[in-house]
Length: 287
Image (cartoon, rainbow, N blue to C red):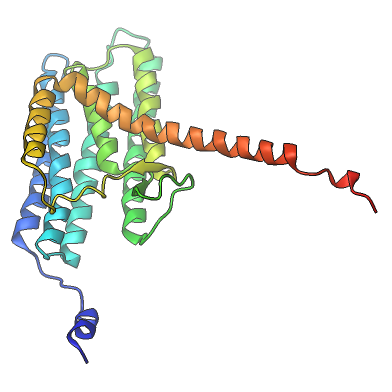
C-alpha cells in the first residue's frame, strides 16, 4: 500500500491544536463580552450597546482566520470544527439576539401605550429568538453540506454560500447598532421596523439564496507589496469612519443576496416568456 493510500485511510485527528484554537477562544471571549455589555446597556449608558456591537464585529476576523490558519498549517481536526461551531452559536447567535432585544425593545419608554409597549417587547423577544434558531439551523446545514448549491447559481468561477452566513448576519445587527452609537430605540414605529429587519436577517440565513463567500481569495499565495499597503489603508479608513462604512458594507452584502435572487427570478421569467413566445403552437401543426 502506497503512502497516499495510507494517508486516505488515516482517521481524522481529534486533538486540539493551540494556534487555531486560540483564535476560536478569542471569538468566544468577544461573544461573552458582547453579552455582558448588552445586559449593562441602558438609556443612560448607551455606550455599552455600542461596545457590544463592536465586540461582535471584532469577532468576525477571528472566525475567518481560525479555519484558514488551521488549513494553512495543516492542523485541522474534528475538535476544532466542533469548537468553531459552538463559538459561532455563542458569538454570532446568542450575543446578537440579546443585543437586538435589549437595544431595540427593552428600552422603549414607559410613557407610551403600555399595551402596545408590552406587545412590542414580547413579539420582539420572539423575533430575536427566531433569529437565534435560524442561525443555529444555518450552522447545522453548513456542517452537514459537502457541496451545497444555491437555487440561483452565479458565476462558475466564484464560490458562494447557500444562505447568508451567520457572521455576516451578526455583523449586520452590530453595524446598525453601532451606526446609531448605541442609542437605544425609543419609538414604537422604529421598534416595529427593527423587528422586521431582524426577522429578515434570520430568514436570509435559512434561505437557499446565494451570497458571495470570497473563498477564491487565497492568502497563502504571494501578492505584491502594494496589496499590503492597500489592506492597511482600507483598515485605517474603516476604523476612522466605522459607523458609516460598516453600516454600508454589511447592509450592502445583505441586500446583495436579495438583489441576486430577484435578478435571477427576473431573468428566468424573461427566458421562459421568450421561449413561449417563439415556440411553435401545437394547435397549428398540420396532420
